[in-house]
Amino acid sequence: MKSSVITFPGSNCDRDMDVALKKFGFKNKMVWHDDAELPKSDLVVLPGGFSYGDYLRCGSMASKSKIMKSVINFATSGGMVMGICNGFQILVETGLVPGVLLRNKYLEFICKNVFVKINDKKNTYFKNIDSEVLEFHIAHNEGNYFCTNDQLKEIEDNEQVAINYCDNRW
Amino acid sequence: MKISVIITLKKDVLDPQGKVIHQTLDGMGFNDLNEVRQGKYFEIDTKENDPKKAKDKVEEMCNKLLANLVIENYKIIDAQ
Image 1: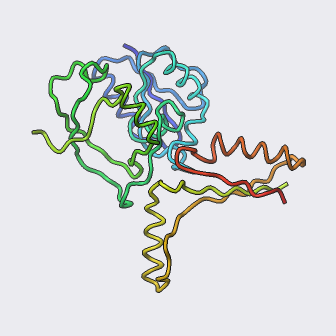
Image 2: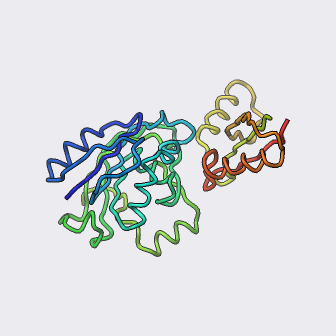
Image 3: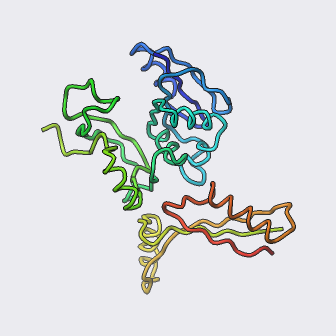
């Protein structure tokens, strides 16, 4: 399997992603945001960080960068794209994922472990995972997901919520 | 030609920063406020001299980048 990790000005953990993907057997390439062409990939990863210093709205500048046109084409033709942290904020700003991420409710930077329950056992990312509940680490300042009621209904009707936050392991 | 844009959060969108500013103002003695909402203000200086064309271009900028229409409204203030 081939993967590409995109680096934007202000990305971080992009090299960690490269190490992790290689550990799981991916042939990974690092791609610069100003490149136009995406290498042939099975998976494209947008890493976290603070692309363009979170100017205007987090992810908004990066969503307009040159490489994102190729990433959008790749995604709309069925390619797998994973956005972590700021990478997810970028995906939201491209419109590939509906909604937007607001500042956290109490203006806190949230950095902790959370539990999530897998809703969709057929989902490509989760189908080979045996456990029902996973423990994830989160670290964000703008992680308060917001969308219109119509968008929420559409997401739920299409069964696109693969995982939900849950209280604990049990 | 200069055009200004004001971007505000939609009514139903939570504005934690506005809320904290409200609380702080309240603590400073400005205690007759109902609500404070924080927004953004842009000044755009364009080479376009036709006010109608300039305004249309700025509207396009708002739709494509300056505002996120899921949570924000924009108001273009006429060319000066």
